[in-house]
Length: 182
Image 1: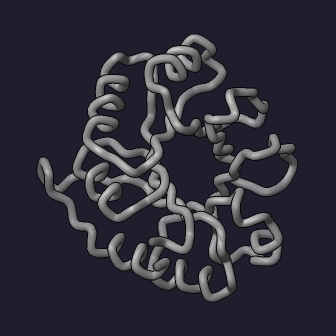
Image 2: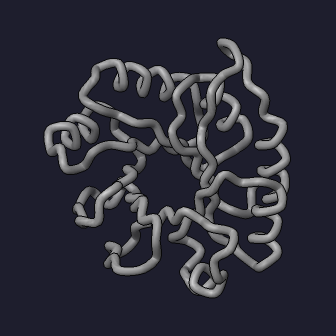
């Protein structure tokens, strides 16, 4: 079991979905849009994985897409990319892709996805309730190790990747990074 919540963003194929579900991540996200194919992929992913919560990444300013997503996809969460707060059922976890800590009034019980820069001052990050923050970066062993050694206890975001061939992808680095958080 991981000591830090893990969100994998932008899953685009079942190889990643099955791998990350087997690794015991907490959340996986997938983009949904007005193309019906995105919903077909969502339902395929939902049928293939268990034990992980699914998050839809959508344009929440499109009210029709938001309604279709809530009714058809039944997501466990939504990634919101704009600063305007939206109100949804409390069963749907909101993740705000904030990119910064400043200037945004986040709704209660929402999570923040902050794009981590390894050269930033750690104090503001460490002062946030670890239950509501996920840091996203192009993680390396050094950058993740530095963050963890500084005492960070919040969530970590990774992103899905491309397959080398259908059903094949190299997960060596991801294995090592997730192993650092156990």
